[in-house]
Image (cartoon, rainbow, N blue to C red):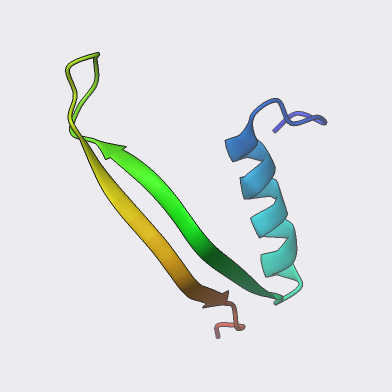
Length: 64
C-alpha cells in the first residue's frame, strides 16, 4: 500500500489493521441509518431499503 491512501476502502482497511494489531475493540453504533441495496447495475435496477438501528460490536482477541 502506498504512503497515502487514495480511497475510502484503503483508509478503512488501514485503520482496521492498525486497531487489530493493538487488539482494540471496535464498536459501530447506527441510529436510523438507511441503506438502499441495488438488485443489479444500471438505471433500471430496483432497490431494497435496509434500515439499521442498534449496535454492531466487533471485537478482536489474540489467537494462538
